[in-house]
Structure formats: C-alpha cells, structure tokens
Amino acid sequence: MNRIGGDRLRLLAPAAVVILTFLVFSGSLANGFVNWDDPAALLDNAGWRGLGWDRLRWMLTAFDLGHYQPLSWLTLGIDHAVWGVSAFGIHLTSLLLHCGCALLVYRIALRLTGDRAASSAAALLFSLHPLRAESVAWAAQRRDPLSGLFFLWTMLCWLDGRRRWALVCALFSLSAKLTGLTLPAVLLLLDVYPLKRLPADWRGWLSPAARPVLLEKLPFAALSAVFLALNLAAQASVGALPALADVGWTARLGSALYSLAFYLGKTLWPAGLIPLYYGESASAHVSLALGGAAAAGLAAAGLRFPRLRPALAAAGVFYAVTLIPYLGLVKSGRQLVADRYTYISCLPWALLAGAGLTAAARGRPFRAAAAAALLAALGAAAWRQTGYWRDSTALWRHALSVEPYGDTARPFLAAALITDGRPGEAALYLEEQLAIFPGDDASRRMLQDLVGEDGLGAAERAAIHRGLAREFLERGESDKAAWHRRRAQALAPDPPPGG
Image (cartoon, rainbow, N blue to C red; front, top):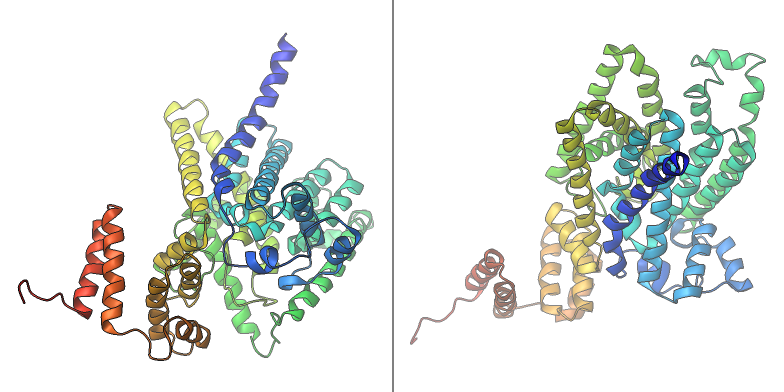
C-alpha cells in the first residue's frame, strides 16, 4: 500500500502541472483565426490540407512565409485529416503540445534537482507565463510548442545519457523551427554544467579526454548547418534577409543587446504584450529598465554567493545562446522583438525561480501562499493574454492600446473591421494611420477603396462617432461613449433645440 501511495504521489505533481497548464490556456479553444499570417499560412494555403503524397512532397519542400518547417506542416496536415480547416482542432493540438512541454520541463527540473515541489514550480513558471500565450494561442505559430517539445526532449535524453535518441529529437526540433539550431551549444553547456563531462575552462577541452565528448556534437552540428542553410534560403525566397550593408553590424549588435534586456524585463513584468514591438511604448521602456536591473542583480548574486555561480552562469549562457537566432545578428524580417522568441530561452529562469521559490517557501506557510499567489497571477495574466487572440479585432485593438504609434496595428485593425462589416470605423482608423504615416500607400489605397478619392467629410465622421458612442453606451462603457460623443460634436455640432 505504501508503494502504491508513493506511486500516486509521484504521478500527482506532473498531472497537476499538465492540468493547470491546460486549464489556463483552454480559452484558446474558443479562439478563431486572426489576420496576421493565419490567412497566408492556413486559410489561403491548400498545401497543408491532407496527407497524400503530393501534400507530403509539398511539406518537405515548402518555404512559405520564409520558414522551413516540414514537421509543423505535417502536424497541421494531421489536424486537417481529423478536423478539416478548424481553428478549434489546430488550437487543441497546439495546447496539447504546450502541455507536453510543461511535462518535459518538470522532468528536466526533477532530473536536475530531485525535488518534486521545485520541479512543479519550475514547470508552472514556464508553462503559465503570459509570454507563452502568443505561441499557444496563435494558430499559425504551431512551430513554437512543437519545436519546443523536441528541444526539451533532446535535453532530457542528453541528461539521461540517451545520445542517439537525443539526435532523433534534435532532428524533429529542427524540422519544426530553427530554435533547434542552438542545440549543439546547449548540449556542450549541459556537459559543462550540470553533467561536468567537460571542464568549465575551455582550454581543458583540448585534452585527449575531452575529444570524444566534443566529437559527440558533430552530428548535431551537421544537422544544424543543413537546417540553417534551408532556413536562410526560405528567408531569402520572401525577401526577408537584407544584406549586411543594409543593416550594419553596429545596428545588429545594438538590436541584440536590446533584445537580451527586453526579454528579461518582460519575463519579470509581462505587461503590455503585443504581436509586434517597435520600441515606442512606455511598456517597452519599462521592460528595458527591468531587464538591465535584473542582469545587474544576477551578476551581483553570482559575486555574493559563490555556490550559485555555476548555475547562474549556465542560465545566462543558455538564455543568450538560445536567443541567437532571434537577436537580429542575422537579421530576418522587420520585427525588433517578439514574445514567441522566448519560448525556450527563458527556461533557465523558470528552473532557477522554481528552486528559489520552493526553498524560500518550505516550512513557511506565508511564503508558500505568496508563491501560490504568484503562480495564480501568472495564470490569470496568461488567460487574459490568450483572450486577446480570439479574433483579429480584439488582437489589434489591444496592440493599438499598448503601442499607439506603431505602424502596424491600425491597418490590420481596419482590415478586421471591414471583414466585420464596420467600414466606417475602419475608415477612421485608416485616416488616423495616414495622419501619422503619410507614406503608407497600402493604407491609402484601402481607404480610397472604402470611401473614394475625396475621403470622408466632417458630417460623415461625426455620424460614425455618434454610432460608436451609442454602441459603447449600450455596453456600459460610458467613458468611451463620451469620448466619441465629444469627437462627433467637434466635427459637426448638434443643432440647438428648436433651432
């Protein structure tokens, strides 16, 4: 009976991690598609729809959207075979993959610490963090939880000494997303700490004893080289890989340092999360300040507590190395930073924080309650963030509220409003976009298609604002209703009574 009871306890912790992760992100199952990559990747693309030989051939050769991701396409093809073109089916698979990642983080933490409470805390800090919402709740971003699953599995196999299975998992990770490019370096890091198969001083790697350990990484490096070439070709095929002369190394280094601080800050304070950042919002400035302070604090902790130095150093190297594909050193696309890039890179902070919280809370009920409250707050924020991805209108309204001077949210929001049958409101956003970015020819053409060459008159704008005021008033949002009413009055005052 004691053994059976112990087995149940061993199952309880990982089961709780999976269930809580599923519940927090279950709101994604009600989400639809959004008008950012979903149309090009899924709605207007027939390549992934099915598992016939022609479809499998396409999946193995497709460079759509500048990515080489045959395994991601394959899983979407399986979704189509089960559900058809279904947002629910796609979101369900992505959520289950994320739950699998949470379970693997638990297993990795247990392998490192041997402590079930600390492992559970680490897994939940990873899986419930609001930065995960973009990867889980965005249909076109299947590759994050899929690649992450096999990346984590590679790590676990390596820690357990299963080298061949680690190579297979690395292949699958690379087949889903380029995050796996960094696995050779990550495996080297694991051999230094915590496995201690290699000395911390790299000069010791030149010894005959270290040579077999280094040679083990050659197959992983070869896989990474092949998939790097494929992904660079994919980026070049869509014109997303500018020449070095277009973006100099000084700018690239600045972008890298910005990203390292930004993601660390967002990990500490995950507020103002949006699809695209351009460094204009107050939230971005807060993230940079927090990230810089956190880096200084981690360095100070390493100096103050020698026993923590190996773990802190390994965490910092893991964080920086796994972000290399997304730091802008090899610039691809125009985004500066993105939440989805943190899916794997922030793993060591979750492991360290889980161990730290558990050590601080053990035997202290008040601290344990505070740790539970932190996890609950992260879960609530992740639930709310997932809700912003329910449709295009909600997503871009939120993005515009966080970064009102970005050049992306208004056109996407206008397109969503047109689809929703609200052309008048869309026209207002397009006019605002052109007032801020007069060179936006695509928005100008969209506006002309809506209202013609002459645009909207003052009376037409006022009528739209009055309609919006009525809608907000009916929804009980009196402040927004009053704002639209004032705008309407400024554009076309109501005639005086009896006038």
